[in-house]
Image 1: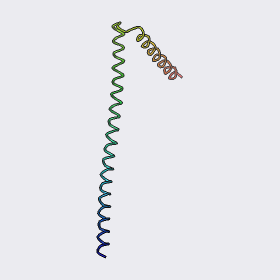
Image 2: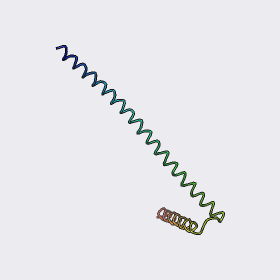
Image 3: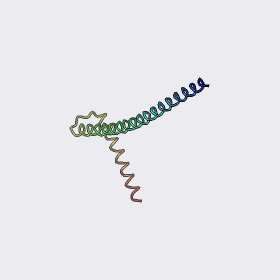
Length: 95
């Protein structure tokens, strides 16, 4: 009888250990999810910042006249698209 009680106690102890381990892993998982979210937000803002800097470089090159014709054509096309988009928004607001 005592042997059965010992086995039950060991099973109970192991179960408690597994439950503590599970709790610890859940906490770590939540911490890692939060960290991943923060890193993704940081990456998004850095990507946006890089794009803004690229646009500034293109504008500066265009001002200095150092831009190759192919790049200048791409810039003009992009500017035309922006202007059309702005005109479309103004038209929508006027309705």
